[in-house]
Figure 1 (tube, helix red, strand yellow):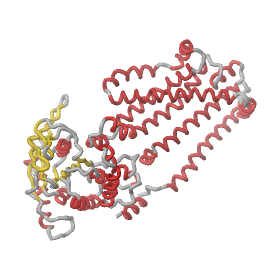
Figure 2 (figure 1 turned 90 degrees about the vertical axis):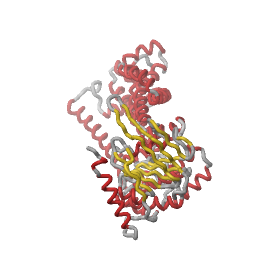
Figure 3 (figure 1 turned 45 degrees about the vertical axis):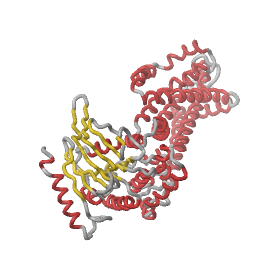
Figure 4 (figure 1 turned 60 degrees about the vertical axis):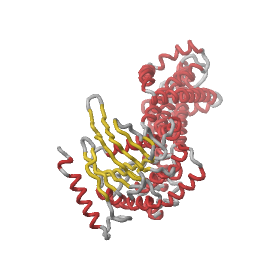
Length: 261
Length: 273
């Protein structure tokens, strides 16, 4: 894994939000190297700047200082090789499942027939075969997020940025989707940065877990997860390691020194 | 997997066509009953209070007037309908670009919005005679009156809709580096359509009123003209007949829009459920 080239490098990124009265130091000197096809989870309590960091990597928000490079290009705005997924599915209600998945291909002007074929393959991979002509409101929350995942992958981006994509789902659906994401990722490798505040999710999915502390947002620790995939919460031979990691994460996230107040 | 999801969809009751069919009967039956009750009360009141026909005609008087004038009435009805639709259409054509300008530019919003509010505050009926001076006795001042009353609700609702695009939709299309035009066509405008229809439904009822107000001054035809003329002859039954026709026109136009909304934005109704 360590022989992989760097996919994303975050170099001394700081972010300060200023409004008339308040000055909020959201991120302070964040540096992080992410390897190609690596799965990174960003964990931390609310307000630690993890979503802000994700938006900066996505090019939706210019950093106050420092820079982000994806591949060999500096991030100056949004780009086609970076895809985003949000807590809300953001499916367009006037389009059916297939049309929603095809939206990025249409906007980027990709070949129609090839895109359609890829969309059908992705939907099959996500267990949504036969749902192509359904409307989003006819689907459950978990299915909507599967569709959103297919849409995020349709234009074959190198990097997938996910901002708490399963946070609005119930615990079981959440775990099911975590498993499925691992499976899809293993068949269609991407560099993934996944923001969450679920410790379980962070451990299940990550190659490396980046733990952030708030006010100002800093990287507190980076933990490596070596347990083999696919991982699940059920009893397995590597349950011991996952439990140990879970305990360590709990301690880190609740530690006094990371939360001075 | 697919099977599980289908079962789930069925269990969550997201497919309730049977229930919808039942409520359709209710939606027709209940308002009809209300209407019948109002007519009966009206009839009862004319008997109880013994009003003269030139004060308050009975529903029967109005009905016989409607059938007696069936050569004349369609012409007036048509005149008012055409003025209403022309004004309504023109208002849409003018209001949509203005709404887009207001939604997209803070400067334009700050410049024009207060002026629009002020314009809307003018009692329209006060301008009717002035419009006749400017535009003569033809359909011009009537259509203009309709445009004036319809314009504001359409601009307001459309601009609100365009500014209420869910933030995750905006992030989504921005992350795809979509051009402003693509953002507008693919996301912002369709997302605003339910709001646009709110404005259109308010405006269509106002449109009929606008046409009638326009016809009160300097007109020679139309249902509004008929009401004024029958008032001068104390032919109250005819005035009532014209009012009944106006109500029918207004109701029909409103429900045509509801129908159009069903066809164009079925997803908005489905999401509300």
